[in-house]
Length: 158
Image (cartoon, rainbow, N blue to C red; front, side, top):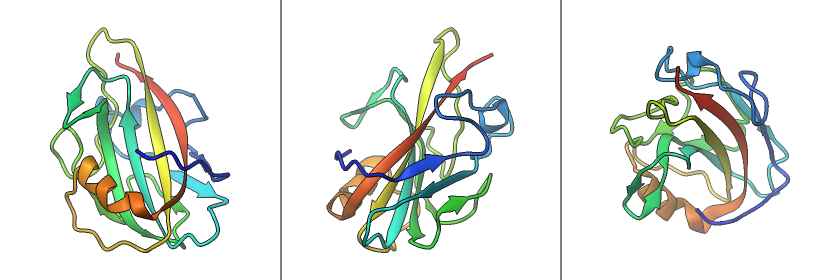
């Protein structure tokens, strides 16, 4: 992913920064995406995308590391929050091979993993097709990223 820091702030009502992600949002629970919101997007923002990535996962795929849990895009600039289990936007394919959100589930005995919920502010409103992979999505988005920020949560498998 490119490096495009901004003053944007990302938060969730489900967990605090660096806090534990509730089991409800994991693959051990109801496997529903947590509510997210963001503010202070860069000037000129016309759209957003969300990526949830676990950099602690022992996986290398297509030249990238970790595990992609969620790709959500085609979010217009007036969308600055997502409700739990959102149906807003267009979903990409996660590293589990499914369209949409796939919650945390580190390998047994692997300890606590970190989950990065990235929000990317874009200089355009995208109209990309459903089912893009992370490399495909980033290839389309990189020229349009104005800024990005993240919320990090943790999860440990029972």
